[in-house]
Image 1 (cartoon, rainbow, N blue to C red):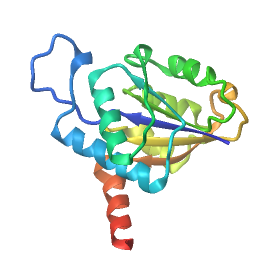
Image 2 (image 1 turned 45 degrees about the vertical axis):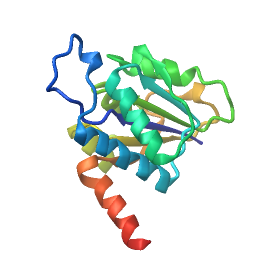
Image 3 (image 1 turned 180 degrees about the vertical axis):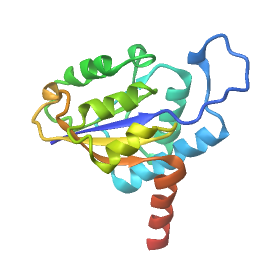
Image 4 (image 1 turned 90 degrees about the vertical axis):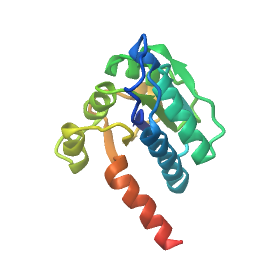
Length: 183
């Protein structure tokens, strides 16, 4: 089995003057959400073996905040094609993974690419997760897809199953609060 973890960058700051959209940093809420995502990843043990991250400032900052909160020591591979990318750029990255021991891959990117990738790779468009993803993938959302395959080279359209969809305002806060009450 192989797992793909898709993460839309956390909330970015629109207040400052920038010469290019790619340079937009996270705002305070985004930094907080990225840290909560890191805690969630640590608690749920969703440890990626490999991380591809858009080279945009807000995605890099999302990864760094998440990495710090999760305790992951893994470095991300910053990929220019994930900024403004589409499902074809994501599939190329995924299919290029040749390490047979790599089971969990995380992609930190942007919409509409994250949303499109989740829906196009998913085999069950009627699932509750797919319907929620179809509606909206807010900033800071995390989606997991599982594939019953031996190698990432075999990932293709409609071959995965969405196993989780976490949104920062809804499921993430509830999941973290639930874990705290059980401790």
